[in-house]
Image (tube, rainbow, N blue to C red):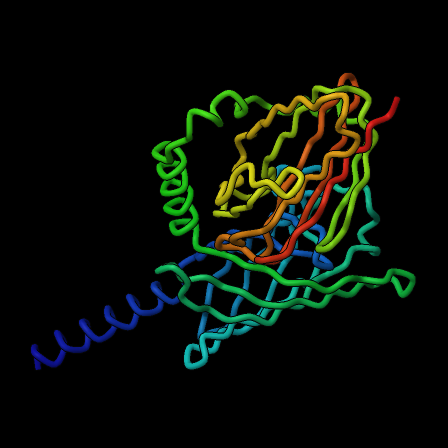
Length: 298
C-alpha cells in the first residue's frame, strides 16, 4: 500500500513537472520584412498549453512605433509548424488610431540553419478599418539565447578579421550624425540612384541600423572591387575617396553576398559630400545589387 502511494505521489510530481515545462515562457526575437523593403524588429513571447499558444508580440521595440499586441495560436510538434495571429493592441507609442492598425496572421515553422533553430514564416495582415490596405511579408525569429550567441560570435569575427593596410586609410568607425541627413531614399534590386557631386572629396558610410545578423556585401567603384565579404554591422564603415577633375561620373555597385540569419541583406548607405548628405536604404536578396551614380555638378 505504501509503495502504491509513493508511485502515485511520483506520478503526480511527474505530471506537474511536464506541465511546468510545457507552460514555460518562450521568447523569439528577430525581424519582419514588409513588402520586401521595410524591415522592423519583431519579438513574440508566449506559453504553450497542450500546444495552444498564448502571449504577446512586440514590434519596433524601443522605436517610435513600438507596439505590443496579444497573440494566440497553435503549435504542431510533428510538423514543427507554429501558426499565430495578433488579436488586439495592448499598448503602442504610435500615433496611428488603434482601429487602423494592421494585425498580422503568421504561418511558419522551425528549422535548423547554421546549427541554430530558426523560426521563419510568412504573414498576411488586416485592419478593422475597411479603408486600410494592409501589406504582407515574411519574418525570421531566433531564441534569445541563439541571438546572443550569434551576436557574440559576430563581434569576435569582426575583431579578428584582418584589414589590409591599403584599406586602413579609407576605413574609419564613427557614428552617423543623423541630423545631417538631408535626403533619404530607398533602393530595391536592380535600382540606380543618381546623386549630384559638387566636390572631388566625398565619403561613403555603410551600416546596418537594424540587426547585426551576418549580412555581407561587396562594394565596387567603377567596376573595380573596393572590398568583398564586408560584414555590415551596427558599427559604421567609412570609405573616403578623392576624384580627379577629369572624372565626370563615379559609379558604386553594392552587391549582396550573404543575407545572414534573417532574410534580406539590409544596408544603410550614407554619402557625404561637403555639406550635403544623402541616405540610401537598401534591401537585397543574396546575389542582387544596386548602383549609386555620382555625377559631377559644376
